[in-house]
Amino acid sequence: MSILYYIIEFVVVTVIYGLPVYIIARKCEHELAWLAWIPFGFLWLQWDLSGVDTIWLLLSFVPVFGTIGMAVIWMGIAETTNKPAILGVLMVIPLVNLPLGYSLATYEPRERGQRGALRTRSQLALEPAASLYSSANRIRSSSGGWE
Image (cartoon, rainbow, N blue to C red; front, side, top):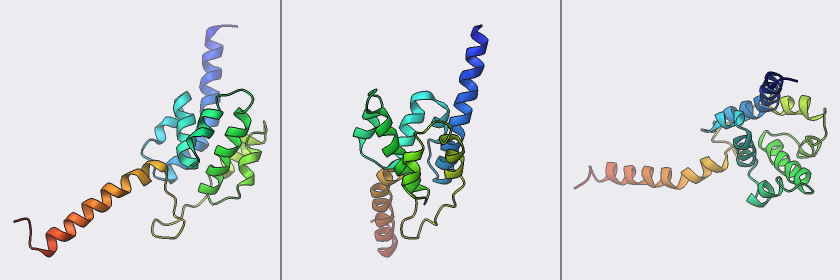
């Protein structure tokens, strides 16, 4: 087979598996949603969307524990999308994961002010800086400006 066949196969597989993750990341307003199209960036994006510990990302690279690590990561993504966590376990089953991934991508995100609103690890990291900035603005506006 020619190299062109392998390139086409790589692009098709990347689009089929990357599109649901990209859609979920966009609905979560993740600023790095484009990582769904990069092979190892795809794994980092899944981990960031899931909100699980770093150890599960590292275990996904170990051959024996890779399936367990990806199941835990997808369980976190299922919870992020307001779906039952058991769907994440089903994501490691071949041919079940294709329609299920697109099913997870069709969720309706909660409003930002609601309890349990969707926030990724990257958005949570920015919150302390944003609250500090808004506190400084409140102080400045209440005192009539900086003196």
